[in-house]
Length: 202
Image 1 (cartoon, rainbow, N blue to C red):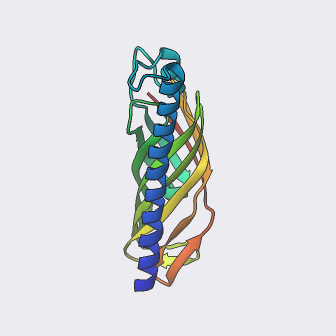
Image 2 (cartoon, rainbow, N blue to C red; image 1 turned 60 degrees about the horizontal axis):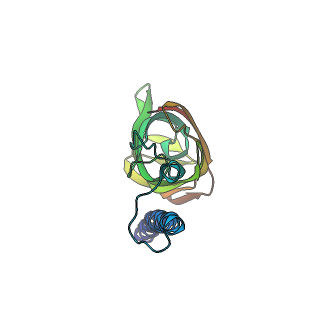
Image 3 (cartoon, rainbow, N blue to C red; image 1 turned 90 degrees about the vertical axis):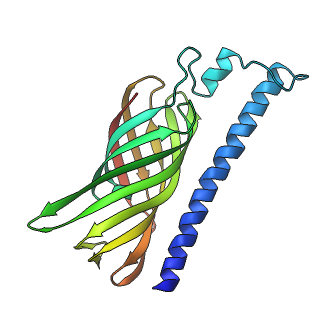
């Protein structure tokens, strides 16, 4: 059990470090390239409006993207209601999502609280999403050919497609989600677990 928990903590930590490092390196590289292309001899300069659009930022209304969505599968396990936002005033880059959901049938059921740090790569409204985090799971059910009779933390990752308009509007997500964690019968790893989500971005 202790060895399995160490594996879970290690993979979870590496996932977060990877997303954070990718966020810093990509944003710094893109900003430096735009600044040098416009003014090669100047370190500090005003970024033209067309470059702002390349960052997913509207010149007049620069705001961070916010998204409400309902997710089936993936980090949600079954179904959850979620909130997602970017860390910066942009439609892409690094962000975070969190939600809650579950079900109860004749006294048996579970509650899930998925939390992930994620990163969106792309332009306009089509993005590749990668993420890593954990889902707090509590309940008394059979899950993934195993059983859960108390509260546990499940490690999760996300690799998928996200449709997210530059302005407000309909959003769609679909992906593959590796899931791993300690259940009643020991450590379980599922290399893929599908997810699909529908929501509204503003």
